[in-house]
Amino acid sequence: MPLNDNKRFVERDRNWHPPAYAPGYKTTVARSPSQAYVSMQAPSVSELGGPDFSRLRMGPHDNDLLLNYREDPALVGQAGLPIGERIIMFGRVVDQFGKPVPNTLVEMWQANAGGRYRHKKDGYLAPLDPNFGGVGRCLSDDEGWYRFRTVKPGPYPWPNDINSWRPAHIHVSVMGPSISTRLITQMYFEGDPLIPLCPIVHTLRDPEAVETMTGRLDMARSRSMDCLAYRFDLVIRGEVQTYFENQG
Image 1 (cartoon, rainbow, N blue to C red):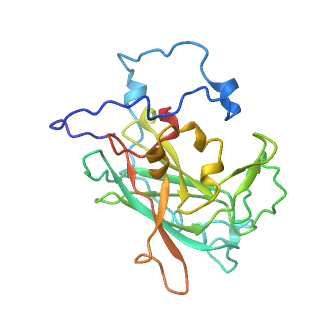
Image 2: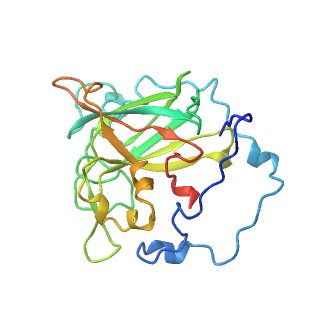
């Protein structure tokens, strides 16, 4: 991600990020590295180069999950809305010094209001919503702002132990100047009682890391008789950065 070369470099705090091997989060047992990391002292062109979004054309509803999916493609944008609590998710993409990161691709994906993903491997008994696909994308503007309209996802069980539940969350990806700088995180919702019970959250040593992944209710941006708004800023580097899953 872009950095201000006139400012000091802030080294990543390895104690702040979770260990790759965290037995309480069972899938890390199999997927954590068994050998030492290889330092990339001389990255290749393929690792430094990346997509150019300056000419990327967005669809009229790419960032509006209330309208961008129908099981019948001919009905996209027509009547028939997803079931669930309507929300706005918005925020800014900034660097460690508060400088906006403009024209970067922000993508998101989520479960529906019942807690089920539109994915062939999701076997949760909650029904699929014929009017909800669960994916969206947008480009940050000149000041780094992004915005989505969607429904609040439901929590869902997962087979980590006898009764593990994921808190309601939305996955977020932000793309830097190359494929290798893509960052992925999750937005939780403030006040959710499942957050402190989640085995994945337990891998984080510092409670402040969890706070960086928590969307805050913003009544000023909410729409009367329509939807609530949650602000989720993405700080891509430095001492106050958002915790990203691929930084462990």
